[in-house]
Length: 384
Image 1 (cartoon, one colour):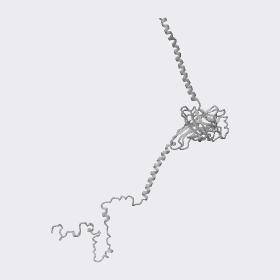
Image 2: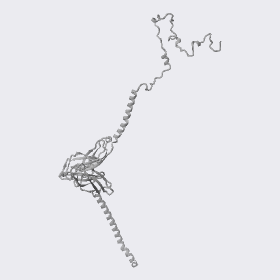
Image 3: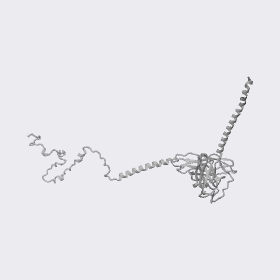
């Protein structure tokens, strides 16, 4: 029985190891392909951005084409021609050494490349010069390409210090918060915190840093910020420097830290609008016109003629008030005036005087002396 089945089972037994080895080989090839892909991505991520120029030399008023690759996709870049710079040492003095007014902005494509024309302008400092390309937002990245501005003066670069040399070891950050007064226009304030290390051979004592604040595309304004302390060779230290903007500042700002003519840190800072100032002006525009209107109405009511004013309300009089006002008393005759009366006059008071009892009764309009009843005139019509 085994002799019969042996020719059938032997090929199957021989194929099993081969199939397993083939599957293992396929898995190994797939793993290798994945590793290659990961390595390619890592290499692309670790690769530094590169800038190339269409010409290495041009005069003022000319134009060159700048190409770049290896940048972040869809990143906003700024291109500048800077003096006192080399690709090895970078831009000494920051953007103050660049022709900022003639710079150009460019956005990279989906692959991290770009192509843009740049006008040739003379930087504010002597050459050697470079075309400096740096990111505007997001993670910092820059690249320089050597360039010669024809006709522009040239001067040697400043010597590098042989003593201590500071470098940033950790990401800088802005700490602090704005109070309620900043909402009403008070100067925004923060603290720039970073960790620096001394890579030189000599200690650094009481270093003087420079803080630069830039708004938009304008060059930063630098202010000195001394730091008290000593950083020994090979040591590190935590640095805190105050940063303050002008009153009412708002928008996007760029905070830079410079030491020894080299920019160490660039940190973005978004400052909110002081809406309290806007609310104050809105209320002022409502209250002042209302107050002026009230004052104007009071002045008009004061100077207008009296006849045009509304009649004043008089208090109601009692029904007996007119009768009292209409009754007048005549003065009684004295003994001196009684003897002066004309002859023939009666001593009795006249009928219309107030002393006469009959004068106190008002005469009715329908009653006359002719209509008074008498013995010769009947009081009723038709009677004789």
